[in-house]
Amino acid sequence: MFNIVLLEPRMPGNVGTIGRLAYATGSRLHLIKPYGFGEITQKEVRRAGLDYWEHLEVFEYENIEDFWSKNPFSDRHFFATTKVKKFYFEAEYKKDDFLYFGREDAGLPEELLNKNKDNCVNIPMIDDARSLNIANAVSVVVYDAIRQNIKEFN
Image (cartoon, rainbow, N blue to C red; front, top):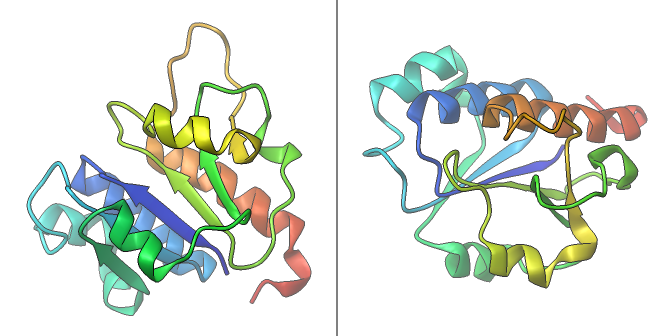
């Protein structure tokens, strides 16, 4: 239903958990290297993804340029970040949109966010919270996108 894009993920368990979410929501998972771990075949990824991994639409890319060469950039790309005021539920999502999430330790690159300010979204949190776990953040945004498009779900 949607395209979940993980830019340089660091933790294999998070990738597995997000893969499980992608399968459950009918979404495609796009993984952009370099990873902060070996390969997605690692047991930590498989364990978190359970037996869903083999049925998941998952794609790997060497870098962001490789990803964009196969998925041309458009206004249907959204970027989750703590650095903007526009909330994720203020965006209007459509089927097949691309939802980007950055590294667990650094988020998405500033340059990428600065070039795409209109499509950056934030999950509201109290001021003392730095961020959510990436798997939780992906869940929040993906399920709101589904809510907005529930008639097309399934």
